[in-house]
Amino acid sequence: MVPGFAKRYGIKRLVYFEAISGQVQAIQREKQIKSYARVKKLAMISSFNPHWNDLAEDWFTDVARVDPSLRSG
Image 1: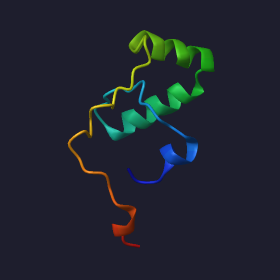
Image 2: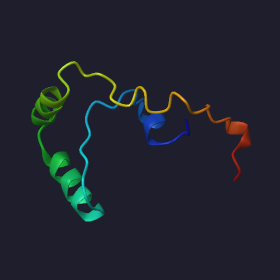
Image 3: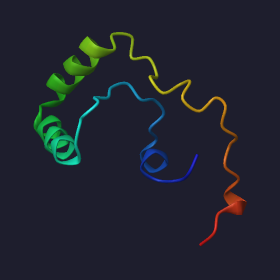
Image 4: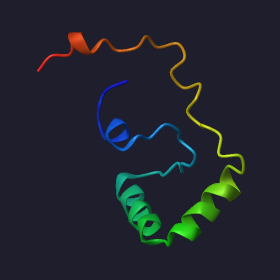
């Protein structure tokens, strides 16, 4: 909806996520996952979401698209 990381890198689907209880723990977990080899990351995603479905597909179905001409700044 708003230009940023996902648009810059062509991210189209959310295929994996974890619920983490705190900010510090989330940052630690992100760093841990980033250190994994690509094959380990792919296996982790496949075990969580075998069909690589877009897990956020229905998150914003009832939200109107943002009109970029209305953004301030």
